[in-house]
Amino acid sequence: MLSFFLEHREAIFIVILSIFLGIEVISHVPAILHTPLMSGANAIHGVVIIGAIIVMGHADTTGSMILGFLAVVLGTLNVVGGFVVTDRMLEMFKKKK
Amino acid sequence: MDQLSHMTGISILEITYVIASVLFILGLKMLSHPLTARRGNILAAFGMGFAIVATILFHRKDGQPIGNIPWILGAIAIGIAIGWIIAKKVKMTAMPQLVSFFNGMGGAAAALISMMEFPHIRPELIAQHGMANGHVLAILLGLMIGTISWAGSMIAFGKLDGKIGDLRIKALRYVNLTILAVLIGFIVFIMTRHVHASTELTPYVYIMFAISVVYGVLFVMPIGGADMPVVISLLNSFTGVAAAMGGFLYNNQAMLTGGILVGSAGTILTILMCKAMNRSLINVIVGVFGGGGASNIQAGGTIKEITLTDAAVLLSYSKKVVIVPGYGLAVAQAQHNCHELDKLLEEKGVEVKYAIHPVAGRMPGHMNVLLAEADVPYEQLIESDVINPDLPNTDVVVVIGANDVVNPAAEDDPSSPIYGMPIVKAREAKNIIVMKRGMGKGYAAIENMLFFNDKTRMLFGDAKTTLQNLVNEVKSL
Picture 1 (tube, one colour):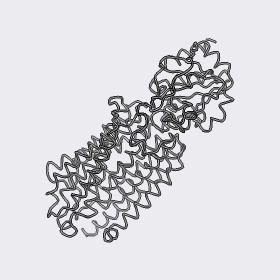
Picture 2 (cartoon, rainbow over the protein chains, first blue to last red):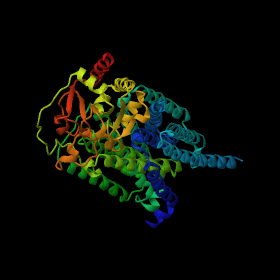
Picture 3 (tube, rainbow over the protein chains, first blue to last red):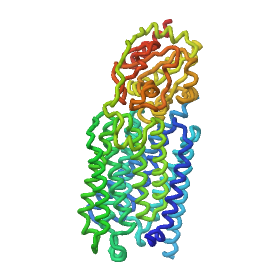
């Protein structure tokens, strides 16, 4: 347990600080922006694509190639779809005047 | 020399990750303000782009650079093409299910990563620490959470799209708790095995995947449509956590900050939404809401209809009109007609405002997006608690396709499932016009006494057609 903590202390720090940061950043959001915000956050967790790229980049068997390929496609869908949809929503707010 | 360039590559990668993390945080921060939101989104997208490019170019695993680059680029190209087309083509009303769909894709990617990494756990690590180490835990949690998020999101997608109905069985909550316990049992089981190579345990991981799919499906199945936004938000934060597990796995800071940020922000957003509906998260998850309406006030009084001409006259000669839009307006795609009506009335000197309930539509803020699409000025959209004190001075409240958010039972009837939910206090206005398809109940499946109020007049029919006719009537006055 202790060795686990020592080994991962950097990651644990990042996790704790990120948790507070996430709470802090979100808690002042007006309700009207909840949907775009959820959508934007949705796009950001598309960062999982980095893991997909790493796994694909070191895939050696056909099976893992196929799964890795799929993971990269899905991750990209998450990223691109997420950001584009958010932009589309926000574009509408901007058109006001 | 080679050593040096290798070090430089790693440094560039690490620095890029720091920059990406900063851009994610800034992006989220800017997304929470109307004026900067769009730039914030683009900023976060740039952060993501940097992180992806740097990973492909500079990532090293045991000194090995990323291989299969043509395949990776191909996969990214496919993802961009499909994602772009879907995101651009889907109607604004279908936005919630779209978010749910993309969320599910992220969850699936996280689950796939875990499935591929499990057989590759280093034998040295197992020899030294056994299976009970952080690496294995991150893989198993990533698999479980990612899979649940994927399966759950797909069900949420189907439900919002009207393809899947509700499954309301009381016993389901016990079944779900049992399945959850089994999943945790699997994690404990796998981590306490004494093996030489993780491949010996791969079948168990596949079984775990299957059970997680079942859990994800059953978790969302009983939850009623009104609670879907909360569920999507929750699943969104799940995917964030699943992505962060990948960050643990690869000791990758960008994945860690990005994932956890979304995990915590998503959780807070979920709680904010629950508050807006006066529901506890536990109730949403066990699906107490909308269980067929435990208590029903018996419908009393009579329904009074109003003719289009009378409605047009009433609206044209009012000083203050407040429109309460609901999902019915969105479904009928009537936001443009609605804006036409409010422009006409404003030309006649009527002050028109929109009362936006936090959960009007299918997601918080959904209604704002829809009305913004129809060019309704931002300043005309007023949040319900701000406009409520003003309603007694309002001549006419026009309720368009909204139901639960104006239901006085939330204030009067302690036995009502929506009791305590903040509402738009439509009944305090001098006159109320309700546009509705028919006498069907709202998502919470409870009777709405507002429709029987003495001041209420009903305009039955499809919101779009009714609004069009109303606009014509007002024009011809």
